Image (tube, rainbow, N blue to C red; front, side, top):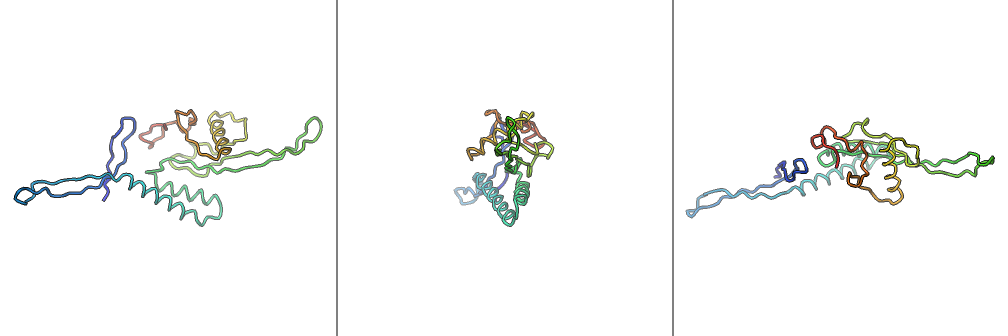
Length: 195
């Protein structure tokens, strides 16, 4: 059996979730009768958390397998994330929508050639751990008229991810963490801000 114990292993972080398995055995004296008990503890944290995370992945697969559209996928994923707030206490899912527009304007008195521009809008599709009023509902990557510094920062991150097809780590150290994610929220590690 795995017993959960909250441990303070670091001054920098809040208490850490750990799991332990115990084995009790007698310590026999010279006459063969028990003189004591030997308690052997084995940490099983990685196993328990790994099983829990695998169960979440299986839930996501089951929940989204029969979806007819992306909205169903987002709803299924959000539902699964809500079931495992131990490992995923905060998440924001954005659906990426690409829109091509044709410029039908005039240039130097003549009709433009119909130049196409591509705009990407990220629409919030689900959240866990945030209220929907705490995070931007949409982020446009093709727009330079964003007066919100955080949205402009996220817009640039999304633009780079689109080009490279790589994920990005947001952190204070890298200077790319939007302020709306850098606030302390109730329930997040005692209300502390993201790091």
